[in-house]
Image (tube, rainbow, N blue to C red; front, side, top):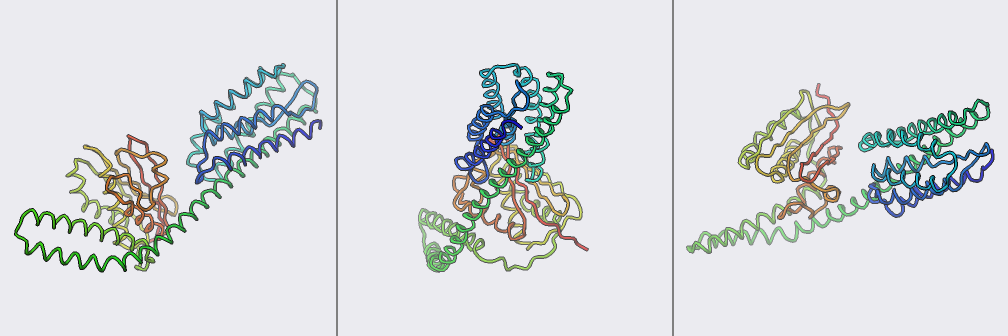
Length: 414
């Protein structure tokens, strides 16, 4: 096969583009579309500049791979940008293959754009599979268009196109597998850093509780004594305000302790529907008084292993946050259902929503979207869910609302 060196160069250009994108733009598993556009465009142009050939007058390369990567990982706009650069460079190069390029790449681009929705919520294995299937379909499409254009019937042509399809598919598998591995590593590094910060925070919490709680208790007692002796209404109001702030401080310290101490409470099998309805009944006055509506839809026979008080604490916190995020006449829908061996609790509100940056920072101490919030309540809720071997995912859009999805292992209740 002529041009074997150029084939290896194409592989090298694609791998370097992936590593460059990862090095400059990887951030906690979320990669920048700008980086995808820059490096994938470079990969496309380099691949087209160093094609490999078999038959005189017909040149082939691996430009499909960075193009598909740009669409699948960078999004529609990034993919359109890279496709425009590809077509523009093909016009610059000239030759008879321009029409074949347009005929073959337009359906490929449309198919890849249609697959973006699948990639958004897909697991690693599904993502790699979708990428490989797209590369195979794309290479077959290019091969068929080329064969029809050349009206070729020699066995050598079909042999070459079979090898070409295998090369494109294999390179796409290698690239998507590499990207998913790099993204997983970025997420693990982020999680490791977060765990280290939380470990330090836990030790700090114990120190705060020991050094501050005792003087706070003494101060609280003396202020109560002064309030009982004071006859001046203004002084009483000031003392009440001081007591309120002391209680708020004690609540913050308690949240720290809840996070820092090990999960020693015994867990038991809980009926999820019953727990949700109990908490909803308790929180309904708060919801209604703020002018909102709440709807609970839970399947029967849903059970998880949890400590009842802490499970209720998590639900209360999420409901309270939803109420505070909604304007008048908002709606909170709580659904619970079983998915394979997991129980899923979904809380969807019609509140103000959050940006991607705000979602990424949720669960960090002292970060809150509320003016007087500390972020400790959500941090504690995340810790409780993690202790139950569960997870939390967030989907939100500014101005339209937020969906919190809690996923917990199912407990079979005999």
